[in-house]
Length: 219
Image 1 (tube, rainbow, N blue to C red):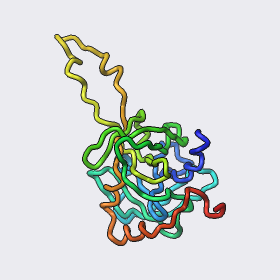
Image 2: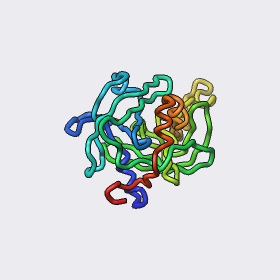
Image 3: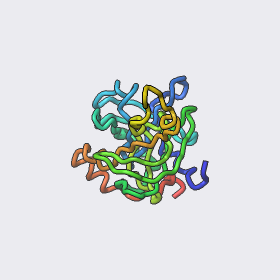
Image 4: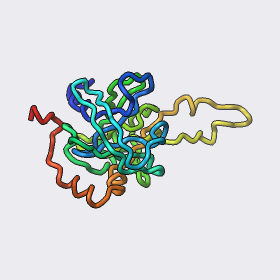
């Protein structure tokens, strides 16, 4: 792991219980009071106002109780709100991704370990953007953080791959375009998540003091 990114492990949580053999389903801290995750898979069973516990990947962290406050099937995301305590560590602010912007993807890999990749926002689409890091199935729910330590989005999957027209030519299958295909990251823009929050929730967000992604007891 890049030493400059080692502190970012503290914004990564999972809904998977520590002793479970199931894959670790990624949850990431968005601000002092809220965290976000993807809606598909087992998370499709979560319901509005449900209370659950999320578990940190940071061995120094503690589990925290959260409540489901937003579910978006179309956007493929869920927003949690803390119940009895704030997150100790969270991004400095919430912003929007921009074309050409450098970012870091911080999530969980297939083996349940912290996974950090770098990338650049390469395309804009309605409601989401495309990042040029190599996308994997386990990237769902990963935080997209810019170089200022601002939360700018969440990875929700891979860009849909449509085989080129010459894949099938004269009844002969040409596998070269498929074999060389590079899967890009599909990133949900933070502005879409914010648009689903109530006015009261957004006022709380505006009132957040900067945290500099460090522990309160070490500040």
